[in-house]
Amino acid sequence: MTRYPDSIAGTLTPSYDKEDAGECIEYADSICSAARQALFG
Image 1: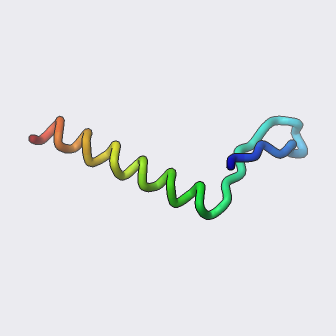
Image 2 (image 1 turned 45 degrees about the vertical axis):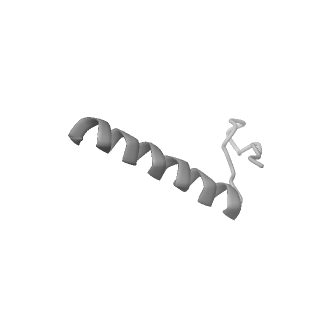
């Protein structure tokens, strides 16, 4: 679950727990792999 705590400036900053970060990295890696295949075959 992503949380958006208030910062000192009053803006919202995403905060991730370890599981969220790992899942995000997996998605990013998957997207990069697909892009690489599309660009370079």
